Length: 353
Ligand SMILES: [Zn+2]
Image (cartoon, rainbow, N blue to C red; front, side):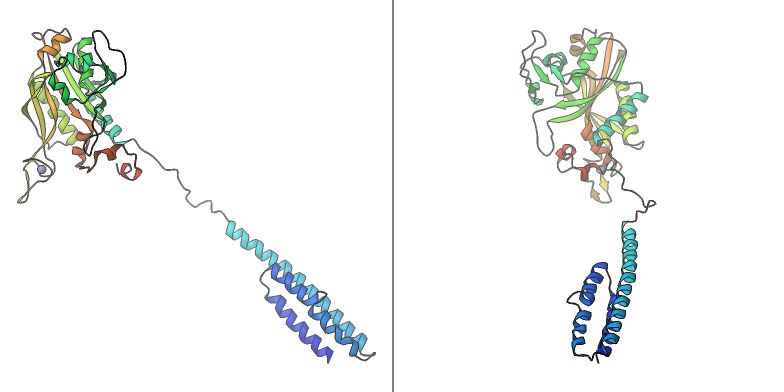
């Protein structure tokens, strides 16, 4: 009954070949079936017990089965190879119409954006932006601004001093604590009339939630014959309306600065409560009674004009100075718990602006 055994083996083998899923699986099966210790070889061991006249018939059948299986295996192999290739192509296919990954687009820092906007607004009013040294002589930062040596008012500017030799007339070398040092240089240059906006980095020895040792200010100065407080108010009102919106109002309150006389604090009407100080029946949390403090302003002190060798009886000058960070945050209605966020370079914060 070896014949039956061989036929059964052949049928099972054919099914098994058909069911292989990979070339590797087929290779293993091929060894199992046709190898030296394979199923067919094992079955043919029974040939010894078969009669001599049956033997050639069974031998021929075994040969036939072997060839048949070899053919089947070859066909299956080429089919599997083809399938594997198609599958790989599918996996590795590149869709050229698929949108690519764009490199991240950066943008200007919010303070740079603010400074550009401020520059543009004043340019439309005939102001030229000029730059002055950040490393400055004591003379321009203080003395020329009516703050003689050892004057207590200097304490308000927590100044960084450079390790550098003193100048005989100009004194110590410092990091300028306010943009008004540029104004002192400008007055000295005396190319009148002057309409200049100076936006720059300033430095003070202070760092906490509301202060950074480096921050930005802008000083605007208008010098000519017959400049009055009315001109100053006109400029301030123009800037406030352009920067904050045309519904915003400006007011000034008397104040004291060493380098201006009269001096003012400049307020703008609150954008949150429209200057009323109330939202419904509740007090507005953004402002003080409808107003927000913007910065300082005034008419340049006669002593400052004299220090620049300008005759205060002939010339007068309107001056104002604001912090860029503060002004920008007021515009955006931004209350930063920690102002140092502006300079921490945290992209999650910066990309919101
Ligand atoms: Zn308000």
